[in-house]
Length: 263
Image (cartoon, rainbow, N blue to C red):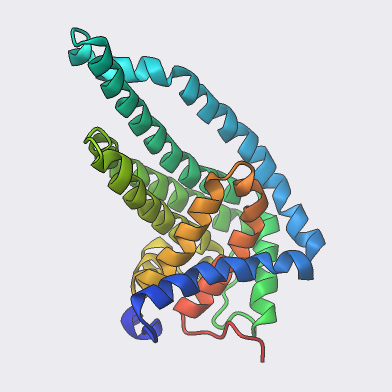
């Protein structure tokens, strides 16, 4: 399969990035068309969200101790210098924690709410012409594969997050450039994670969907970054999750050259 031809660009990179973000807005439109189904999709996000809010609150509580732990060289510095470097270290910890929390939240929520999100994704597919090349995958087999792929993505996000964490110690750059790069990295992982259902429905695993999304990276990044930023808003991850699944189905169809406009 030639992925570069499947998702051949039709506009500039900025236009495709904005088009990708627009797919999330279209996913939000399903709240109007299918409010019951979308609200049902919030339930697993609430469960997962409660777990991750507790975990992130714990990180915030201990962040000063963690910052002191990784900056022992500053113990003998002046109070101002010591406080400054530990504030930077604390922000780096919170940034890494936020990146991993968003990616992990998505993975765990998709596993918890698999039947709900599968139904949302299928409804989107049916609205735009169905699923060409659909394969019948048993539920438990699909859940096992999606869980394994999710673990791989979270582990990869952690590996990528370590250099970003270290870069967070660089004055100015760590507080300006690194958050932007972090949003792009987080957005990419979210896009790859969220399109899992429509790709599994076509018998495609993680390596294939990653390759296909790379063929039109600006669109995938536009969608993923939009989701990432919404997930950073309090309760945003819970409320947006069903719409993100719907938008990801549109992203998958677009990347595979299938219609995303109603005839």
